[in-house]
Image (tube, rainbow, N blue to C red; front, side, top):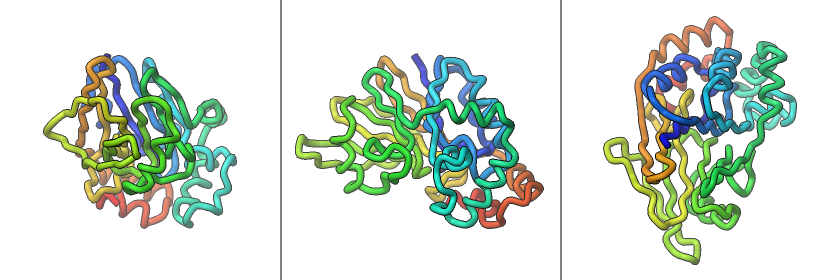
Length: 243
Ligand code: ZN
């Protein structure tokens, strides 16, 4: 079973449509949260995602802030401006859909979580030490996370919790072995690894082959929509740099 793994769409419909067009055939979709926030098309993105077949969808911290379930003052000014704009823009039906989502789910040997198994909404797994600290907090073999917007795999290499890190390899799919792993597919709508192309991944649920994908999309089109919505300039600029 081929699973499309996406995360951190952030209301970037142009990037999402490019990913879905590139992905073509898949039997299920796992979406790790942050459907909205930052970008110009929150309703269109929520509607597109919720229409996907065999969907498991999580809620992220930006989604929760839009819902009023997290304090917007804990976000930086630009993020807060976009969250408040999104709150005013989202239809009641899409608002209700986001309210129905959880930050954590399980699929057989996979834990799916937006941020980290230790703190499903907030914690950024940004380095080996934080990854190491998180391995004891999930009990499946593998854990998929989003939130940092950086594609990466952390391998637990011994029972003392020692970890190593591998950057995304777009040329060579990897087959998961007996190591426990924390895996981030990267961000569809606002990548932060100095590569502006939309990031996503495929997982073969039975053979455990993981394939990172990176595809260009029409960034200027998203930027034009952001300017038309009067979203903050820094948010408009950053998607062109992958930051
Ligand atoms: Zn995010």
